[in-house]
Length: 452
Image (cartoon, rainbow, N blue to C red; front, side):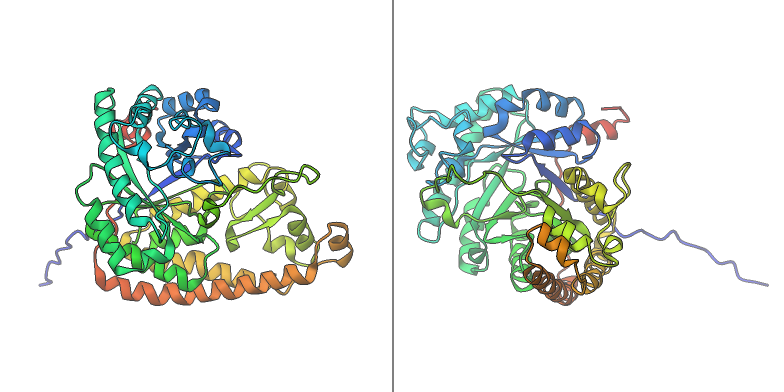
């Protein structure tokens, strides 16, 4: 008589949600907004700078109708910075709160005649945003604790103002801006966590100066190890101005709950020049950035001329082709027509691939699916031999370009080794960053079975 075998249902490993916030940016806000309208950017959460609000009124309405979650960045940090105040930040509705001067500490104290919190709250209600980044400032090593105390008070004052102005439903996320090396200081971390422990905010946003998508292995490992310590706050953690492979790595290893970045921009942050006067542009020199191609497969961006120079090498087209299938974007030459379309599609595709992996498997999956293939591809790219005539026509120094390719290969190799080793150590820690709980309009509609 054969024994009956009872099969118990296997419990699937948990898949904790991750959050992707897309910053519209200061320069390309209109183009990035149009990517949503054209169906090229499927991200559910959008960050809009207060300085761009009046230029995006119709787009914000479309975001709301499409169910996107909208987060307002007050630009408080930039309005208090010598090199940033006179730029696009001056278009924030409350930029004149100090009479045309820097919006410094006294403006964030209760009772200041400029009523900056009231202005922010009324603006948030008018535009019907889902959340506001609490006014935060760069915690410079010399005066960081002073600003921390002021920003702590600002979070509470903003909550009071939102409630008073009819914005009780609008959430607050705390924005912490500091040098990435300061994160590594255990004493500073403790002071920060103590200061934030009782504040009324949902998510902790961390914008680390001197750190970004181009950071090397050692700073990346230190950043991840430091973020893990912030889990004791019990708040979801969003890494700000950080995208691409580095931003994904931080999430894959459970150190953050999500990230905020632009489309091929806002992926690195540096506040070190903020306390110096802004450089005056030479009117005889052309303004604007050179057109760039973002290569997600190898986590590298190149100027259009550099990209076309590499394409002139044998076998280069196979190595530099798009990583995702898009109508009308199948070959490298298609990429150059509108790099933003490909960058937007790749940003969402890479994020969703990571978000759909169970927590327990994310570290190993990420290294094998994203990092190791990038290393292998760069191994081949660094050995390409571009056509010297094409390079000359494009005014590209081939030797310097290929040296950068070789250096990038080394950096990716070190990142691969470091992430593999770190993931094995973090497994024993158990909990990962708490997931973002706030539902966007789109997610709420999906949950109720409604169309946005």
